[in-house]
Length: 158
Image 1 (cartoon, rainbow, N blue to C red):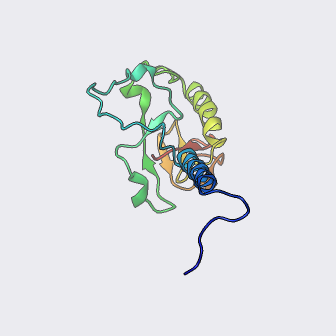
Image 2 (cartoon, rainbow, N blue to C red):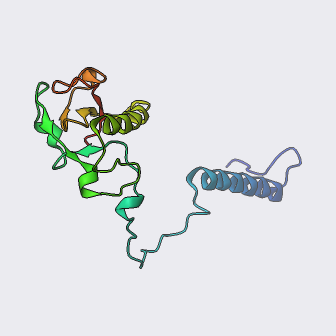
């Protein structure tokens, strides 16, 4: 049988202490990496979700389509009718009034489009906020609208 006594004047207590320190360090590392010490189980909220008044919502485009996922059934050459948001949200934040001229509408939509254009959003397409039509092909961005010749703007389907 082999002698398992520590050598080099290291006592069994020293070995246990060193192992305890290593264990504490490893546990601390795991706690840091996985956040186990600070994570508390979340309790289901008893409060009801809060809704925001439509007038307080900021918008990134002036039109929407009738239903979600309308773009999924469109071919690249297809155009779909859009609905102006200011008809359903008359005093929406950043939306032009329903009495706005075509030039005023396009100017507001152009500013919103510039914000959308600064962000890469998958599946965005183009639309004309004056003619209320949209297409899935983002390559048509800033090209003339087929109806009014104003530049087409970025349109979000989601």
